[in-house]
Image (tube, rainbow, N blue to C red; front, side):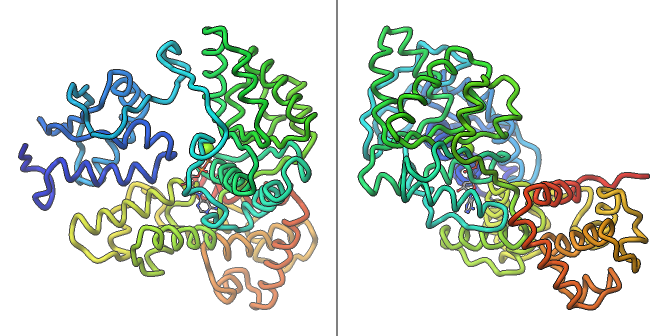
Length: 462
Ligand code: ADP
Ligand code: MG
């Protein structure tokens, strides 16, 4: 199996090993373990990597769900466009115990066994990597983190239920699992499930006439952690069953923690009776992390990979990968792999090459972009933002501009002062005002977050 078109004479098999290590960081661990971990590169033909998997189910799943991501990952490693196909290997891919793919509703539920799961040890579905210790706290997730800690310390007492929502890759599953780990260490019976698994478990229980078993399993938990609950919205029977599970647990003072990609009121097909129950306890959100938190996360991540990455490189990565933490981790892995592959020291230049696709249009964020985007966002003329007008209507947006310049661009007080025609103490007070106001005012948090997202969109012509 020799392929002349791969860099540095690496074999396709080695390239696939590197790709797998990228994928491990980009994918939720359960997805990686189930679908990617045991794959091998069996051939490299006509520019396409042929990946061997253990059964047809896995082959179809990879083809439908991950082919694009895998293709992009391989392309970024090899440096030119490559293709990927999946084939079933008749000989076992690895020696380990036979693995059953995770259930998936869209495909035949009949192939999915629903084993009875005792609620302790590994079978509570907890992953060791996701703990409070490895969770970096910043303004974007402080409330969610504090609520999760409170629940972990006093399950069933502090907030019940706890509902955590936020965009993809921002740490919801991580927090949920961290709660699970912590309460399990205190001797509680924990059950973590995705809503997809809950749904499939239910379907299987109904099919095999074992709903009593299903109920016993879910109602015997001291702490039920249900991930991605938006998935059950619109599924009538699943919602009905979950409603009863919820009531049984809640009335027995058992803890329920839920995550979702949206707030309960923003899930249109969620039943009202569930929506109102979700509001009984605490609803908290996670926002995209600011620059400083992103750098801190990268530091932790690099350390856990045992890699020494200079601070300017971490900063350069954090400036480019801003949307969520999964992207951020993926970007770090790409940079490290790129440097290894081309035998270059990890540097800002490597970041630029490895991550060119992340910010193709706008390059690095500038203070001017912040100023223009903020003027557009708040509907305030740019001249007013840098002018002398101190009315509240202008002062608040101006302070937000200072805050975002500091948080998102990492500019110094002097640099911000120069752009806005203020001295650095004024800038400092402006930033402090926004920071403290954000602790009290969720609307302001939303505005800052919306402005931040806008910074990375193409500038609009007005
Ligand atoms: P979500 O469930 O919101 O889609 P995940 O919990 O799967 O996101 O997080 C995506 C990745 O980012 C995971 O590898 C997780 O460990 C990491 N991550 C998220 N938030 C943090 C954080 N605050 N500190 C460290 N790692 C984080
Ligand atoms: Mg998740």
